Image: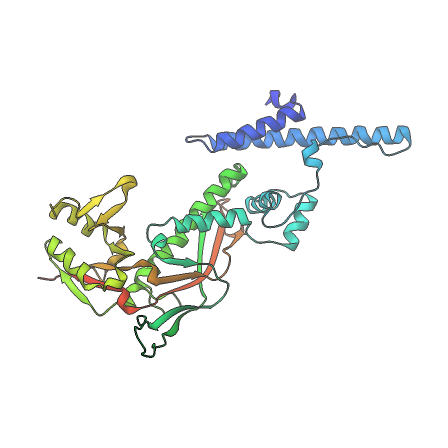
Length: 372
């Protein structure tokens, strides 16, 4: 590109900045933008090299060091490379993309190589937006933890009688490993920093939240969280085979103790929810509200096909906050180039640690589709 060869440093920086925005737009030609970025970077290095050569010539002529302001004033400021700084985020993402790091960035990565706070928060916030996860008790305590709960919880006493002491137990949450790899085409790693971060956050968060979501419902408790299906109440039952009815819904809701009704949530397969919309004609019983939020009898609904258990449609109804999931360590992300030698693809591995359990077996009831 002849016009690039004539650009000044300021023009190069302006165009690089513009490309970052263009790369984030729908339908952007990433391959063309990547090629142009390479040309611009080459031109920038050419300008810097020419300025450095001129500086040395002037030093030799004057007999003393003459400093030429090659970089912008802002770039000359001292940079701070801590996980919660913008400088560290850029350096870490450049490393993940496979870009060349400057001396300061290399030193920072050699000393502290963790996911930047900004990027990690994006992944966590993405998890917390999940339809199921936002209804449970999601925490980020380091390592194995004990979540307090009452094994007996009596009322306050009137009169002169001795008040019975409540017994406080706990839910023990361990540290189980969750690992997922995502393969990215090599050319995609050449897009802008922001576009690359958004892609990686979305890809890894989707995989991690899917695994957590499944574990909350049907986790076995062996090397993974213990799902609601394992520790729900013994108040089981069935609903109408041909399609759920209002009588089924009120029966299910009535089986849950009053103390768990305040924050109760329905968890059911997609098919069952839309059966309710079609079969229950009484207005407001089953509805879709603003933003697509779903409700049955005024309580929120989480649609999740993990509730099809052993080919059987299953409904859980209970207190979402009675299920505790703890993310026991910051999410780790690593890059591996070796697997994509022939295709130029790059693999990124997301690593998380956590555990989850229901704190009270009576906090959920379970109903399955009748067989007859």
